[in-house]
Length: 598
Ligand SMILES: Cc1cc2nc3c(=O)[nH]c(=O)nc-3n(C[C@H](O)[C@H](O)[C@H](O)COP(=O)(O)OP(=O)(O)OC[C@H]3O[C@@H](n4cnc5c(N)ncnc54)[C@H](O)[C@@H]3O)c2cc1C
Image (tube, rainbow, N blue to C red; front, side):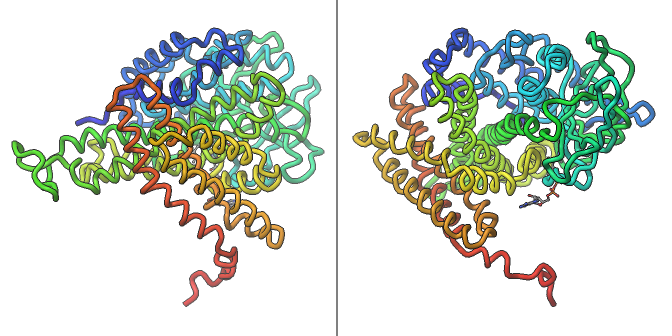
């Protein structure tokens, strides 16, 4: 049975229309074109494109990968990747959410987010090529000057050029303040950029004539640390003031990384040698522009985790229904067969239900993040926009950290359902596990998302986003207090909301005495938050399913999965609560030199 992918359209529609109720939300934000008919067409066409064009290239991308011609610095992508990109551009997919004036279709992010999930599930490595164009577009929309917007946005939005995000250097990963790439001013107002960036996704490829690098570098008079970093736009091919393409710029791929997964994605060492570039935004304020890119990209990487989890789950489910091994403990279930299908065994069901609960709940959580992006920009009034923005800021690290951590768990559980057949390459399950592994690392590791959540969004910003989340939970619980179908979930959710607030205050008090308490509690706090947020979305899913026109089998599957989630996954919060409330000393006392004491 080859590893396959079928876009879960029914559940995507359920998340969008029934749980998140996007139709009135889009109308209220003025997205009059984003009708159900149009969004359905995007879903159907997106499913066709990803299932028939991208998914079949997933295995070949892994097996053959990208190759570099060292003489020319040109990268060749795996067979079929370039043609698939041409179809993607032809289909108008590149500019789905971008403004009309720059060649886009201005659809809400929440209408485009299922396509993103489908691309990632079908072929994560391929999806990385167009991914960073969106971040580059956002950065230029926010901070680019008129010439930069006129010159770079349309080709990016139309997919004729792609974008990159060049932050990382050999000695500067998480700590960008250490970066050394230099930018010297030229007489014509441009800059000469020199330095080496590593791990640059889609830094070089054969899809398009030009690549637009968004590069962090230091001006000669820059202060030390992260306050002295500026952002530059540096095209692969020189661009004249009139927008015409010139000769090759001084930027070149020096090598390709050999890596654990996503072999079809070009991860490049990029050498900048007096490359011509232009300052984007104010001098020394480059991190602001990069954060615009990174926030979009963080939600997007969360979606990558979701897509891989879903694909792994789909395949494991099909396999578990067909694979015959042993008899059910409670009596034979398939007397006409030599053994029962493994889906009868409680432990296999544990693994499948874990995937189902994390995928379907995670889908609503991830799509809601996209809806918050829309509401933060297009909400009815200032207060609505500020509320959405606070909630979005709070949820972004949770979506990134949890959907990616869960993708490790889901791909491993799904692989385990295959037994030894999961471990060998033939069934494609080990590729999904390897591909998933990067998602907890790039765009800020889980540890860094955790610090962003607890240190910045909760401590520095006084938990504004948490308050919105808790208010939403309280409103939901009050509104559904009389609904017997969700009564146990509501009681549990109320308890967790109270505990969430209590834990947050306790950590805040401890942090005043010892700053290490934040770092020591952060990982458990982000995971705890993800599990409580998912409980909210599962309770809402049950209510939404019961009110919807879905089949009784669908409604009952939602209810049973919610029961599983509350009984068997939500209790993980107790472990995280205990861990985060243990003193930071349990982590900090052992001296660095004493780890390997003999
Ligand atoms: C396949 C791939 C694609 C990538 N694509 C891009 C790209 O397109 N553009 C780009 O610029 N970069 C890219 N990266 C780089 C990626 O974003 C970094 O690898 C990542 O941010 C971590 O940086 P690092 O590898 O230097 O690890 P380090 O920063 O050295 O971190 C090592 C470990 O220490 C932890 N750590 C560090 N500081 C702290 C702290 N203060 N508190 C707690 N823990 C801490 C980290 O969580 C991590 O576990 C890519 C990387 C890979 C592997």
